[in-house]
Amino acid sequence: MVGDEVYRERIPAHSWVLAAGNQVFRAMLQGPMADRHKETYNIPTDPKGFQNLLKWLYRHECGIQSMESGLITLQVAIQYLCPELAELCVEYIAQHLNGNNVLRVLQYIHRYCPSNQGSDNSEISTAPSAPSLEDLDEFPQTCVDPRVEQLERSQHTVHNMTQLQELCDDADFRDPTACCTDLFNACLELVDRETRLVLASELLEEVDYDTLELILRRSTLNVPNELPIFEAVQRWSTAKCKRDKLPLTQENRRAVLCNLLYHTRFLQMNNEQLPQTACLLTANEFNYVSGRISGHNMTTIPPTLAPHLSEMDKPRCHTPPGTPQNANIKNKKKRTTGKKKYTRKELMLDIVSCLAVIFD
Image (cartoon, rainbow, N blue to C red; front, side):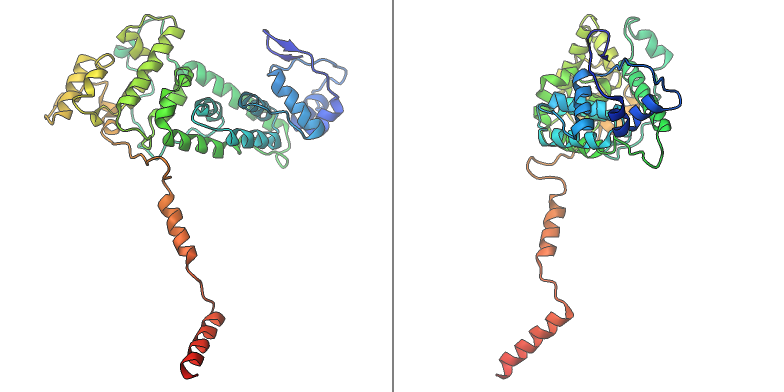
C-alpha cells in the first residue's frame, strides 16, 4: 500500500525484482531483520513517484511527462537511493526549467544541497539564531518561527538518509543527491538572470522561508533597485499571515518575516523609494535609514538593524540579461584558443617556405 492517510493505492510488485535492482528494497525484503512471510508493506510515499520507480527497476524506463512528475519522482529516487533514476529526473527538470517554475524546483532541490551552497561568498553573520527575550515578548503568542517546521522536515530527511546508507554496502553506495548540485546552481543562475519575472511570480508567495531567504541574500540579482525586492517581501508576508490566519498588522507581518525583512538593502534606496517601506519598518528604523540615505551622521543605530547594516550597504552587482557573469572569461578563452599554436616542426616548415620564396 503506497501513499498517506488521505490517499493510498495498492501497487503490486515482485519482491525478487525489487531486491535485485535496489539496495534499499534488498535490505527491507532480504535483510537480517526482514519478515520473509510478509506480503503487504505500507510505503508512505507518493504513488505516482513510486510507480515511476518500479518502471525504472523493471524496464529501466520512466514515465516522466511533467515538471511535477519529475520532482515527485526525484524525491522518491532519493528516498530509495536510486542515483540513476535521480539523474534522469534532474536531466528532465533541467531541460524544462524556466522563470515560471524555477521557484518550485528551487524549493525542492534546496533541501538536498549543502547549506553553504548559493551563499555567493557573503560574510558570515554573527547575529544570534534566535531573537532576544525582549523581542520575543513583542511577538504574537500565536505566531511560530516559520523555519521550525521546515527544519524538522529537513532533519527527518537527513536522518532517514543516514539510516539507509548504514543498511547498504559502502562500496556500492552512491549518493543520489549528488546530481542535484548542478541543477541547484542552474536554478540560482536563472533566478539571477530573470529576477523580475521570478519576483513577480505567484509562486513566490508559496515558497518556504529558507528558499526565499536564499534568494534575498544573493548579491547578483538582476534588479534596477531594491524596491522590487521589498515588494516581494511584502507580498510574501501578506500570504503567510493569511495562511496562519493572522490579522494583517505590521506586528504580525514583521513576526512572520523575522530576518527576511532585513535582506532588503534599504541603504541602497533613494528618498523617493524609501517612503514605500514605512508599512513594515518601525519609526526608529525608518528615521535611521532615511538619515543615512540623506548623508547625515546617524549615531544611534536601532538594535534590529545593527546585525544587517553591512549587508544593507552593499549594492547588488547584477549582470545584464543575456550576458552571463563568465562571458568575459569565455570570450577570452575563445580569443586564446582562436590563435594558431605552432609546433616546432610547423614553425621550421614555415621558415623554410619563407626562405624559399625570398631566394627563389
